[in-house]
Image 1: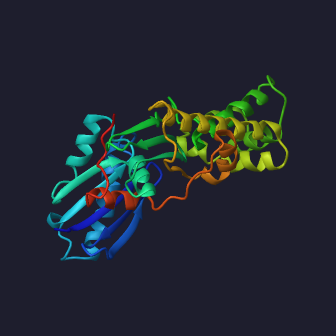
Image 2: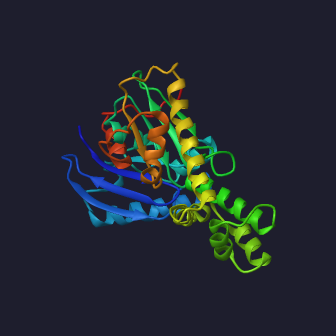
Image 3: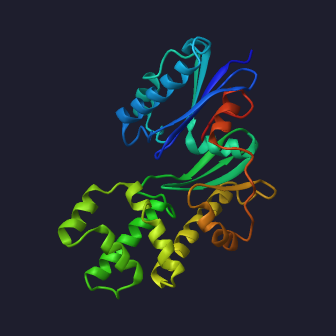
Length: 298
């Protein structure tokens, strides 16, 4: 029997939710703040609680928690202890279906069929669903260990280049001028920014990189080229997981940097990205309805 589903795409930048009746009618939708249990467990719990309460209150009494399937695509559910703590904080639902936000985006893009997906946003990760219902993830290691080619990765390298120029160890560039001015006046201000900076702060510098590249700055353009190199390598890592036998399988590109880097990546991999059928919320709905495999990593 079909049940009401509360689909939630909970990412490190924002949280989106959609409450859907058994007949497919959207009863309510909403957005919240960042929701990543691996970096801020209590904050992630609070964000999801607030969003769930708002949506359920809008449609009472037909959406009592006990009659609703909560289907979650959440960043940062890899650690078992944090996963358990996060999910146990949201008891009372008829069922909880949980998966990574990247996997939710993958099955949403492909309609639940075998496919490959690269996500380039604040972070970066690659996902692939196989015909046997298993999947893999590549990268997604986070700001300190990976997320190669992401917005945070780009911003961090731009800051490194700017400070190298600031120290006199490299020639000054338009990008270094713009970033040093943005970070603050003097060493104390720059250090203060660095000590407080989050991955999102570094990713927020991408428009400065783009503007400098468009103005002819070679340092900025080299950074964008390097990001495209990393993204292309991520695509290849998904193919190599089965010896490269992915011919005819859809390949998708999503995330805030997707349009910025799409053409550069396509040139490198000699392939065009496919148009996704839907998004992460659609993936959550498919998994909850049994129309797509639940996440099972190889």
